[in-house]
Structure formats: C-alpha cells, structure tokens
Length: 347
Image 1 (tube, rainbow, N blue to C red):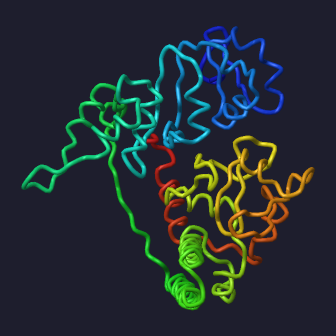
Image 2 (cartoon, one colour; image 1 turned 120 degrees about the vertical axis):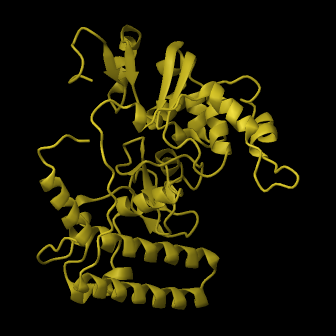
Image 3 (cartoon, one colour; image 1 turned 180 degrees about the vertical axis):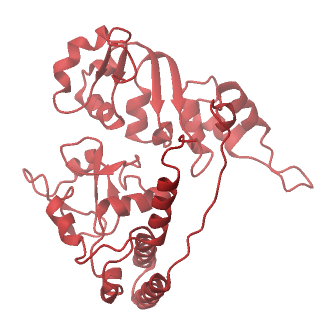
C-alpha cells in the first residue's frame, strides 16, 4: 500500500506480531487495519482485545475460504468481530462441499440462511428431479445472485492475450530416474499394505505421491541416489504442507482450522507437522505441548511419536543433495519462455 498510495490519502496499520499491543490505542485513528487469521484467534483468547471491542465499518476477509469450517475456533474468532458491513474475497468458495459456502453465508449474516440447519435443508441437501440426473441448484443460484459479485478475466483492461498450454517431456535420463522412483514407491506400498492398517497405508501413498511430485518439480542431482531418496530421506515440511493443501488436507487435526504455514512456534499463524503427516495449528500445538517450558517438544497424540516444532534452516540445508544442480525439463522450459517474452507485457 505504501508503494501505491500517497502518504496522506489513507492511514493504515499492520496489527500483527508480538509488539502489536503497543498499537492498541491507535486502532481508532486508522482508516485500514491489516491483520491475520492467527492474530484474530490469539486476540480472542486474550479477552479484552480491541479487535473485538470496536464496531468496525467494514470487515473484509481475503482468502475467505480459510474460515470454511463454521464449527472451528478460527471461524468463531473472525465471526465474533463486530462490523456494519462484511465482504469475502475468495477464488474457491467451495472446496470440499457446499457447507464451505455455508460458512461464508453465515459470516455475512445473511438472513435465515446464516443458520446452518436452514442452509443444509435448502441448499446442501440438493435433490434430483424425477426422471432427471441433474441436481436442482435453483436455491444455490438464488443465493449466489444475491450475495456474489464475480470478476473474471473478460473485464480486465489491457491488450488481448493468448493462453498456451504446454506439456514438457522428460528427457531419457529423467524418464529413467522417474521410473526408478516409481518402482521403488510401488514396492514400498506393496510391503507397507501387507503389514499395516488403512491409516499407515494412506500415509505411505501420500509419501510416494509427494516424492514423484518433488522429482517433477525439482529433479534429482545424483541419479545413483534416486531410489534411496524416495522414502529414506525426510521431506521438507513446506513441501509436505503444499501437497496437503492441494489435496484439501492442510487443516489442524484437532480443531480443523486451515494451517497456512509451518514455522516458528512464536508465530500465531504457523503450525507444525507431526511424524504421521498430521498438521497442527499454532494454538493446538501450544495446548498439547509435551514438556512445559520446552517450546520445541511435542508428542503427537495420534502416533505417539515425539517431534520438533518448526523448521531449522540447518536441517533444511542437510536435506539438499550434493553435486551439480540439474534442473528438470519443466523449469528449463519455463525459463526459456520468460527469456523469450522478457520485454513484453505481463499479459
């Protein structure tokens, strides 16, 4: 905002971090307050938070699908903020089910439909007409027409643009390495599925998919270590979180709030990752800490294994393979595209 607005146009304040309480007396003097979902949750626990004491003119949620679970503490903390007007900005209002949209409707305080029971009765429980396989989305369309303002690429100003889809092909060396990893994953799954239950098998499937995806994105420096790196070396927490986010599973195993990052326990927005690939939000991590006074000690209540909270840059460095970097085909093709269109517009 500081780069796009003149200093005297709008007064804004970032209400975030450990020193945020120094600005409590200045909130009423600002035009815009910027904060995070994790901070709102922490402020609600505080009890006398100014965020929940002020009657705001407009409350705007960016990435509003973060509160898609209306039974979570995160939703309750955000919904309890008093405001005259409410906006939700999201590109994915529905991720898993129509109940995700119901949470946004409840946040907007839409009459009648803000009650979960009524929303489920008239929207979620969609019926098919007799003799037709198409579901009746009439009620859903009526609600969206009343509360939703959609913006797509058609209304954007600028020059005409072209969309070009590309499917990079593996080099012979990449194909050989990929098949080697794929074979190692299949064998590991076959062995794992014979001696473990559904939970363990599910974890191993996700691990195998992540390894294949990591190879496509990052490549491998040392072909001789390809198969050994499949299941023996630990994954970076941020890579695992990215995989879980794409599959809609990056939610706290205890309270079901969205976890956006893995990091320091002092960050209210950061969560932790258990050895069994469950994500724990910052609040629940503090509540289930195994050793008082030890901020990095945590025993998973699901698999009962001990792990550390947050990431260590030295550990990340140790995970990198030695040798000269060999970039995968998709990265090389992307760089070639950027170089070819470097002097053109972003369109």
